[in-house]
Length: 192
Image: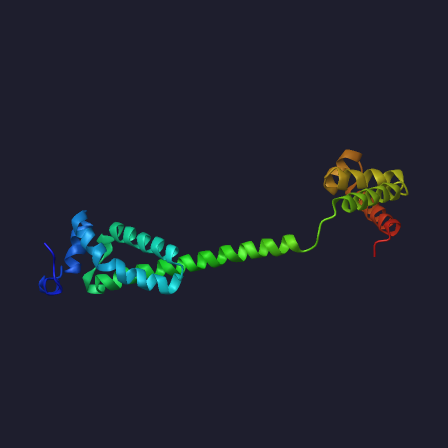
């Protein structure tokens, strides 16, 4: 049987608040009616915020799922079902836009960082070997005691106290050897 426009207006619209009470008790038929009442306006509101039709559909479906799950939280005293649903929809839509923007910002940041300057692996290795050789040569200019302290502290990863214990030397003496050794290394390497 075909319904006319007059039939549609003559039918009593379901009370949305009552439908939500039924949905809160797990009534799927009531949820179908709530869905039919809300999906159009929700999608329209979401689409104005999100812009992308596919993303808007996803957000609208997420809102409907959230309505099903949170139906018990609905309170008619605080507003209409439409207001409750629109609030959920607005929050979800804004969250989706923020998430998409954050993702785009991260991709842009990574892209700019990678485009920065071309990496020349061979030149980098040559420079690193040159610097390593220069450090080895400069380490050779230190006294044996200074070299031993610097190697234990900076290449061995030990603290000044540990170096002192290993060499059975007072901490103050170790600090002096390291300071003098680092000054000589700095001067040898030509570091300002």
